[in-house]
Length: 280
Image (cartoon, rainbow, N blue to C red; front, side, top):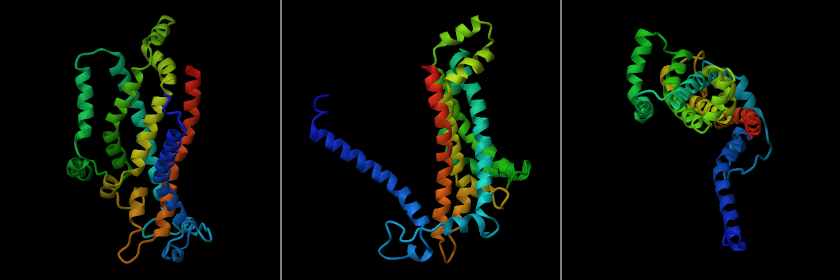
C-alpha cells in the first residue's frame, strides 16, 4: 500500500489511466468530429482534428432526406420497437425464471442452467438457415419486426436468465422469509421485496439486451429488406454505395445510434441510485 502512495507510482497510474481513456474515447470523438464537418472537409488532407466550421447539415440530411427506399428515422423507430419489446420480454421472463432457479431447489435445476448457457456456445450462423426456412415458409414472418423480436429474444433470454439468477442469489433469503411470515405469497414476496432490491441487476440486464438488440447486424440484414422492418445497423450499411460512401451521413447516423443506449443508461442510472439507497 505504501508503494502505491509514492509520487512516482501515482503519476504512472494516472498516466496509464489517461492513456486508456484517450484510447477508448478517441474513436467516439472522431465520429462526432466527422459528423460535424461538410463532405468537402472530410476529404481534406491532413484531416481536421476539430471541425473548422461545425455544421448540423449531416444530421439534417440523414434524418429528413429520403435515401433509397426509406428515411433514417424510420430505421430508428423500428430499432426502438424491436429493442424495447425484446428488453421487456427478456426482463420479465428472465426475472421469473432466474428467481425460480435461485430459490426453488428442484431436480435438474443446475443442469437446466448449463443447457441454457450452452445455447450461447453455438455460433449464430448455424441457426440462420433453419430460422429463415421457418420464418419464410411456415410463419411468413420474413421482413417483419416480429421475426427480429423472436430471433433476438431466443438469443438473449438465456444470458438474461443467468445474469438475474446470479443477482437473486446475492439477496438474503431472510427478507423473503419475513415477507412470507407477514402474509405474502411467494409471488408477492418476489414482486414486493425481491424485485425492488434487484433493480440494479434488472437494469443491467435491460441495458445489455437493449444494446445487443440495437447493434445486431447479421440477423437484421438477412431477415429485413424494406422500410417497415429495417433497423439502424442495416440502414447505416446502405450508406455504402458502389461509387460513393456517404461518410457524413454515416457518422451522423452512428452518433444517433450511439446516443440511444447512452440515454437509456442515464435513465436507468436514476433508478439504480434510488434502489441502492433504499437497500442501504
